[in-house]
Amino acid sequence: MSARRVRVAIVGGGLSGLYAAHRLQEQGERHWALFEARPSLGGRILSAPAGPAEGLDLGPTWFWPELQPELDAVVASLGLARFEQFEAGDMLLERSPHEPVHRLGGYANSPAAMRLVGGMAAFVNALASRLPAQQLHTGHAVRELHRSATHTELRVQDASGQAATWQAEHVLLALPPRLAAQRLVFSPALPAPLLAQWRATPTWMAPHAKFLAVYPTPFWREQGLSGQARSARGPLVEIHDASMPGGSAALFGFVGVPAHVRQGVAPEALLAHCQAQLVRLFGEAAAHPVHTHLKDWAADPLTASAQDLDATGHHAAAPAARAADGPWAGGLTCIASEWSPQFPGYLAGAVEAATLGLRGMASGAR
Image (cartoon, rainbow, N blue to C red; front, top):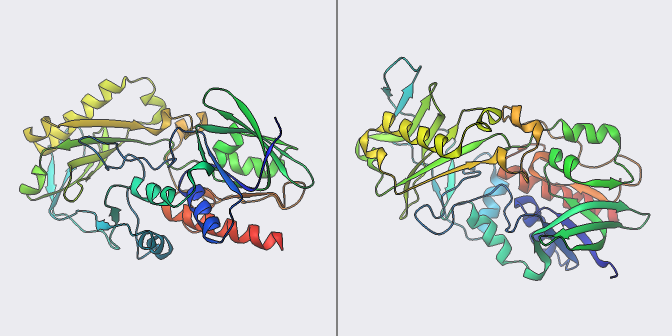
């Protein structure tokens, strides 16, 4: 079968890839295709599906409009409703395994952290709904990229193992650097210093795990608590109110057990320890959630690599987003959030990196 041709191929269907497709569409560019290995769009954006936890985030949760006005403008342009993270009331603190729980006066973060009604999946859905469905290829993993003088040939495999070949004048790489270096074969090879930079760049979210507990009511608010807690005992080290206005009442926390240790712990056991901690902190009312969920991003092969199991989860400086010379210099631009100069790893970074990547692609085409 002959190769299908597009002007732009987007590798990755997370926020940066979808926003790049949205911008191309707005600019009148219709000859593009997006490939996402997962069966659904969103990448590291993951909100719980229909049910008790619907719309509650298991991936990135917050953004800060005062610090990230470009992202906020995109949110507004899509007609998405946002609300401020609930922080009113006291917080709880576990200083050590040998001390009782301390109740302290709470504090409001400044600038305020905002969330989206419907969860961050609402962002993904709003972008996807504005794009031609036939150009969004979910369940399609790009395996190899072969660069010639005029185009790049992409070898793509669908969920059934069926292979296909596509040709693109330009490739927008919307995968995290470390994952791209691990999962993609480039021919000719990328410059060794560039690949070394990619491999050294941690993937945001990769070592993390989030626990979510849904309740009939936000009972902690009735006790004058904000839902915030910090713990040196664990397994959750940081806890927040995850409730959705007019929807589910919930608490969520970041698991402090390192990823390489979690590999040896059954998910059911970790869930039980997380729930026991909420009871320890918030009382007997926390013993009766209507739903619990644990998302371990380190166990997701489309997010994490072996290198990430010992990572601490910090936001690293952005590596180079394109080859400075050689065959790949004019045909490949990297746009995942980790390539953002200002906000690497953040949602705002995905928008910034995609914007800069499209600008660089346009200037290179002149």
